[in-house]
Image (tube, rainbow over all chains, first blue to last red; front, top):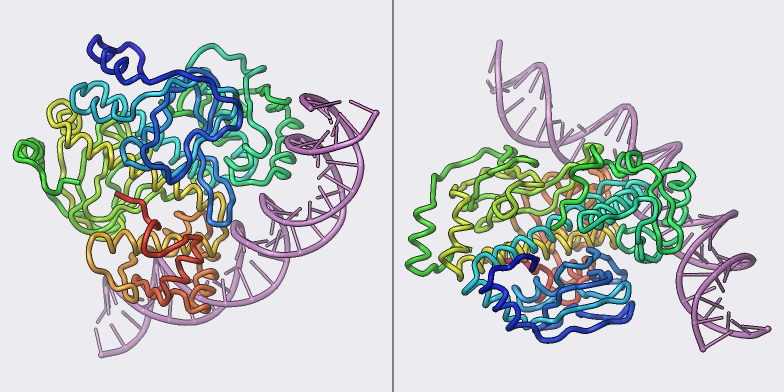
Length: 228
Length: 228
DNA sequence: CGTGGGCTTGATAGTCCTCAAGTCGGGTGG
DNA sequence: CCACCCGACTTGAGGACTATCAAGCCCACG
C-alpha cells in the first residue's frame, strides 16, 4: 500500500510513523470493541482478523500478509468490530491513526489507495461469505489453499509444491466454518486425490489446475484471488 | 451518505448527477465482471448484492436500502465482482462514477464519507460471514430479521409488529446459506415460539428481546446492526 | 523422560439438503 | 366474472454432510 510514494506522501507517512516492533505468534493485536486502535503495517509474518459469535465460536474473516494494513476499518469508523491476532512471529510498523484523516485532507492519491485497500478487503469478505454459504468442505478447503497461494505468489515467487501455510487445523476450521475433525478428514481426501498435501506448516499443491477446479474457479492463472 | 453537504460538495455532486429513474422489481442493475459500472444512489425501494458460486449457487451478500450507494466498490476498483438486482420497485439516481475520484481530489470530507460507507459495507460483510460460519438456521434467521429491522429503524420510525420485509423465501435462503425448504421450517419454529412471524412481505416481531437473544446478540437496543 | 497440545481417527447423532407432491394465491385471458 | 395457469409457498420422507464426543497417537518442549 505504501509502495512508490511521492515525496510529499512519504513525508506525511514518515511523520506519522510511531515505532516498529516484533510480536510473538498468537498474540492479540487489536480487540473487538476497542476504540482508538492503532494503525499497523505488516512488514513480515502473518496475522488474521476474526470475530466471535454470540456463543463464543470464532470466525476468521481474513488472513493478513506482509504489506497489508491492520486497523484501517477502525481508523475510519472509530472502533474495531473485529479482533486481530498474530499467526506467525510478526514484524509491525505502527502509525498514528490520524494518518488516515491527514491523508484524506492533504494527500488524495494516498487516501485513494487506502480506500482501495478497504474495498479489496471487502471483496475478500464477500468472497469468503460466498464460499462458506455455497460450498461444501472440499471446495472450501480448495478455495482457502488457492487463495493463500495466489496471494503469496502476487507478492513474489512461491513454489506451489512447497509453499508457506502457517495455519493450524483450528485456524482452517474457523476460517471455513467447519470443525477441526472434519477439516482433517477433508484434507485427507484432497491428499488422496493427489491434489494437495498439507504437511506441518507447508502446503504442496500437486496440481494447480485440479485444485482450482476443486475450489470452483474457472482458470487458475486469473481471478482466484481478487486481493489488494 | 449525501446528507447535509457543504456548498462546494453539493456543487460537485450536482454536476455529476446524470439521471434519475425507476426500476421494476427483480431487474439486474450491475453484473459481476462489468467494467465502468455506474454509481447509483437508492432514493426508494430495496436492492441486493450477490455473487454466484462456481456451481451456480447464489450468495446474497447484502441488502441495500434507501440512502445507500450501488457501485462504490466498482468505482474504486474499476470492476464489480458482484451483481446487484432490484428487490422491490426501485428509484435510483445515477451519477458519473468519476464523482468518486473527483471527490478524492477536491472534496476530502466527501471522500471520507465514501470511504466510511465502504468500510461499513465491509463490516456488514464480516458480520454476515460470522453468522453463516458459526450459527445454525434459527440464529441466522433471527440475525437477518434483527438486522433488517434495525437498519430500517435507524432511517425512521418503524413498527416492529408490522415492518416491511420484501424478501422471498429464496432471498432469505440465499442470504443465509440455507435452502428455501429449510427456511420455511425454521420460520415456523420462530413463529411457534412466539418470537416473530413472517406474513407475505411484512415482518411481525413479537418480542424484540427474544429475537435479539435468538440472533445471539446481547442487547437489542444497541449493536445489532453496525451499518452506515 | 514426562507432559501437554495438537493431530488423527472412529462411532454416533443431529442438522440440513434433496426431491417430490400438494396447496395457495395472484395475474391473465377468455 | 370466471377459469386457467404459473410461480411461490408448504410439507413430508429419506439421505447426505458435518458436528460431537472420545480415545489414541505423535511430536515438541520443558
